[in-house]
Image (cartoon, rainbow over all chains, first blue to last red):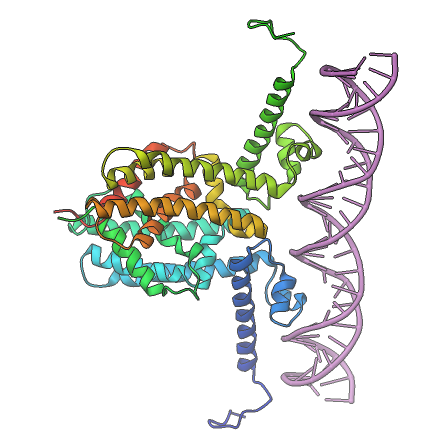
Length: 210
Length: 210
DNA sequence: TCTCCTCTATACTCACGGGTATATTGATTA
DNA sequence: TAATCAATATACCCGTGAGTATAGAGGAGA
């Protein structure tokens, strides 16, 4: 029996619908978890707390996710994927190296002020198991390399000064990660304002330009 | 009986000597603790571990320090004092605003690559009790204000471009805090090299100067 | 010499929280 | 209708680690 195109909403869920439900719930757990991890810290947040905030019980979380570390890893991975996407989409854009870098940095910075991005800065290697930490480092390194490549492009085409690429990438990352620590979404400054402001400062530097 | 100026070292310790001993041991506990906190994270480090690394037992630590949070607070406070000192000593130096700021940033950056400095970046508010966190924030704010004042001086005397002072301070802090996360003391790059390099990048910016 | 204080260890208590065993309900499928 | 499976709960286990009770050893001072 094929589903009617305009069938009235039925209480009987199909296979796909049930899978979508499941995915939705999983997602809800991750959202709730990442918020609490960011607010109180990973170790200070118990899965009982997370469950309570969703009106469910701890075993339900275990029904959707393997264990506490996996919850964290999924959160961090989401954040890292957003950052990678930010780095890669702008890479193929037109413009000289500096213009493309500016665009990447802007996006990167915005991600850092979002729940999953924040989770990335706030999660040190110490929180993860050896394997988790290795994965984490590998993904961060890939992002770092993306940014370095962009800086090199800019130096090659003359739009960026001939700086130490490695250090420059670290300086940029540090400055743009920092808002993940202090920015509060409900504060007076919008993420966009902060991102633009930060990027401009980093690109022009403190010394006045003649 | 007054102590002889060149008395032979005696096994009988005087009052001051005993107090000095005590202070020394306290210090040793903090050093050992901060190292382990930085390496494994605060929550993953038990006081039993710290004690074992010194060849002593946990109650001995409690003999010198009240509880685990106090150990952390003392470590963080030491770091914050170093940072404050870095900010304040250079404040009274000669030179225009930019020159003085450069000097402060350099010192700040070096502290961040030292044990107690690292502890400051790695310790989020989440690790501390409400009172601890409040103290922590207050001290960090004071340092931030010091740096902002310096930036304002520089803008006033024309040695720094007319930027958003608040954002500039955040960008600087972020970039200079970051090495506290990734720099390893035994690595190939010396702290001095990193500090100089970082500060130069931040001051001149990425865009080439005509 | 007797007492007190300092320093240290052994051996405990206890809460917290990650993780699980098991039961229940209701829908799906054979 | 029986058997199965997904989703959820209650009630538990148990390791870890913060913090403590207690005791002993040895020097300091009276």
